[in-house]
Length: 303
Length: 303
Image 1 (tube, one colour):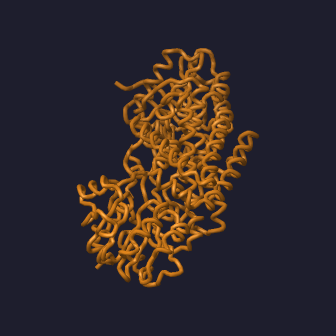
Image 2 (image 1 turned 30 degrees about the horizontal axis):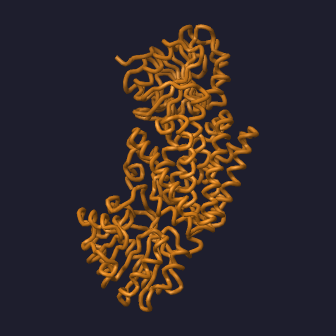
Image 3 (image 1 turned 45 degrees about the vertical axis):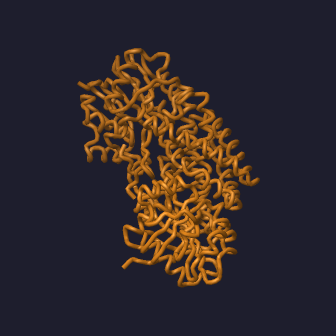
């Protein structure tokens, strides 16, 4: 028996919410799933492909009688959505979110949560470079981590139930404190994305000089960067604006390290470079051993 | 009939040379293939796995009577290897290389090439994060580009034959001028690698603070960086030392762009960020249309 909630409402129907729907259906994790998206086009698409048991035309209808409400919208509009759904929430219901930043979401959403409703923030560490209602698939969360970030008001029962829900979707689950979450994610996800965007921007400038050569001859390094840099612009804009402090701290460290490597190149210090590159190899081994990636060459690309 | 050269000598038995061997055998591109590696352990491994028709214990034996000699060693030792093989080269033979930098290799190797021997530099734009004699596979070059970078002394016949050779290994082939090659590759490969190494180095520092969290929770962005940063340290040290000018130029542009984004984050300029991230998406589309990557989510990872 994997049924965790009777009624689940998905607010926002992008990559994460659509994958949650298919993962819920795969293991019968929820009884009835409603969905809402601000855009009529997205709702039409959802209806066409069978995404959600009921696609609703209003937030109020979507959250009506729901036991779990999932906020799967860009981080910058979480507070606004919480304010709109607040009057329609059922006592005893749990509100969660899937945002990549936690401190700001807690600040924005918590004040709107009515007494008797639980708010338990979450963040599934899973995704692809695709977005929209048609990009989801049931196995997105399999064996990936979902971080649950309880607030001071989250009750143990509500936290435990949400953790069992994410496990039923295929995830490994752990809890983390909000500020710590935002720092760790800044290193493992936010800053790498910003840097990839930057490098692709440099190439775009140069492309004007060399026609399409940069694209035509994109070797492995740049090719991987462009994948990262193809992610949803609105989501990432909001991540950087709402996790400003950690992002700027890590970027400061990054620049410091980059300048040290740049100086070694200018001075021809091969030992410094070799030592540095050897050290980073060990981290890769750690990730493979932790089961977070495949050891197959080129990520197991088929060509 | 795909036989292009009767006798081929592979100098250095790492990822590229071992893949060339299996690709040659797949399509009967060469008659007899000899191989040499400086390390006795590598030669033993090659003999054990059947890499090369003959594994030789000296450079002289390996290049003896060869029609094509492939220098597949780190860029920093190309000149030294060329000096050692020079007295043993057959008149009419072609020497090529697979180095990631071309101007410095031409400067280092050309003076050692005897009259009557052709030197035609090359660079297959293919690889994985793995290295060593056991990392090669026959399909590595399929549908990837190989850039041929003729010198002033390269004869049209020798260039044409080498191009047909790489096509027989599965590559698309194009020619390019040395300095232009080094600039384009700096953008598409060298600087992305340096930046990935840097970000992984930052994480390594932070890891001391947060135990293994950075590894455990490595989301997509960082995970992709670690793959890039797991590449061979000696090869990459030599790339940066020998393509210094282009690397420093592109790093300068990169830092400029990064500071602009950093400033937008600090000032909360969401429009700037959104515009920037939207622009980089188009480049990704260009790469997929150019057939240099798959559109499958997460590179087609199976989980």
